[in-house]
Length: 452
Image (tube, rainbow, N blue to C red; front, side, top):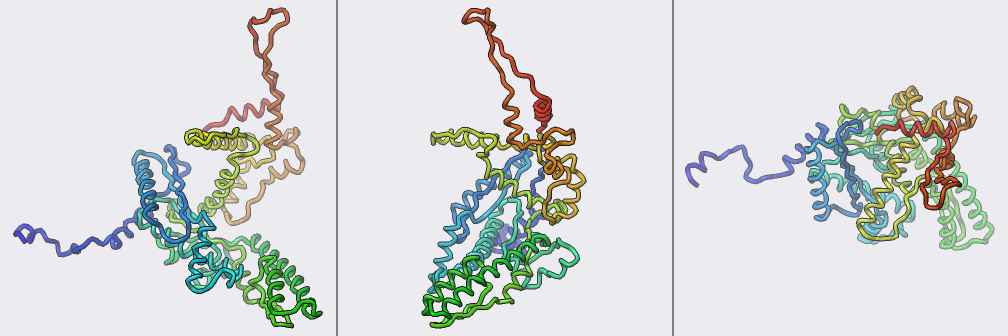
């Protein structure tokens, strides 16, 4: 070792680089400062990537690492270029792959899904999803993915929070929204919500299903008592089929013998499930300063609009003719046209709200403020919209229309190509458009007033 090497040694520096000691804290600092959080009200040009959701059947591999690195580089570059960037993550888009992974795990235990039965197997799948899904999300964090997080916990994870005492159910007697943190979700906020209306609906549905299953099981018991159904195997097959008919077999205890059959409702399991009725827990990495708990709930509910958009890209009102060619450039163009069609349709629906049965956003600002004050409450139509539905008329006394009917009404505007009788063939023609009705003119004026 030279004299220079000795002089420049730093005793506080480790001999080897240990990423885990630095990168987790650094990534959390990025999350806390909101570097990955997109502002939907920003005036910056938008740039969005929807992360292809990995299967919840193991761990991320080198292919995922490559894809994530490319997407991460693209989003970070766009941020530096002044774009408002959203990189939306997700997991579990292939249920069959997940089922296969769980079945392989069961085979290692000497079991199969048939040994467990439907209800137990579904529980194992959800346990696997929570364990492996959490592992994948952790790997994404360790990769440094600059994604914006907002999602919801599954029922198994909610039950785990409640059983561990982290989610105190008695607090919902005073409020319907609680913010908390948990060591299993580092750097994230958990927002627990309880919807009383949903809780009542689930309780009533459960009781109805249990009552229907009880009636079916009573028929099986009567058949066994009369001697028409014998043998533990045949009795078990028939009882299992009946108990699973309404998907509440987990709430029943069955006693099966060669010549006897009995059943009873397991009140403890029913009560345990009922305690979580109406509960859902939202998880997000967005800081409280950037998105309050109430806003997080509303934004999570708005994800349903995104799902609806992807379901109706080929909608019934505005159609893009299908392309039969499978050339890459034409398929990409076709998808772009479909998305633009939905974009146009969305603006038309918003603009024509005063003429249709839809809610009018600007006129219902007071009710929108009420929804923000209690975001957990179930969504409901505004009084103005309900009045249009019940009377089927607008405030000016004219008929209210659906979006489809209004489109059809506008389709009666015709542009005719005309030639006077006195002209000779081949001479110039002129066009004449029919004059719009007052309703049609109002619809055209609302379209012309759209600003984007």
